[in-house]
Image (cartoon, rainbow, N blue to C red):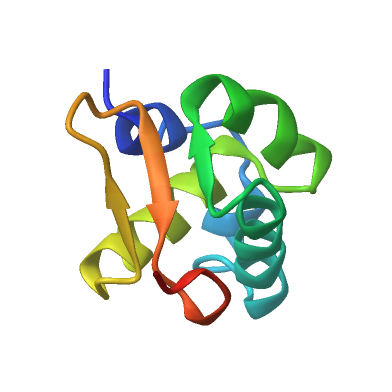
Length: 91
C-alpha cells in the first residue's frame, strides 16, 4: 500500500474535514516533521511521528496529496517513502 494511501485513511470526526481542509499551521507542522526527519519519511515513521506533531491520518493524506500535486513531494518507486522537495529540502 502506498504512503499516500496509508496517510489518506479517513478517521471519524476529523478536524480537517470539519474545517474544510488542513490549516496552514497543520501544513507547516507536517512539512517541519518531515524536514526534521531528513526530508524523507517512511510509512512506519509517519505512523509515529506525524500524530506526535498533531497531524492525524486524514490531514496527512490531504497535505500529501496537495504536495504531490504541486510537485513539492514525491513517493519512491516502492511507494513506501515520501520525499519533500520544499524550500528546506531542495536537492
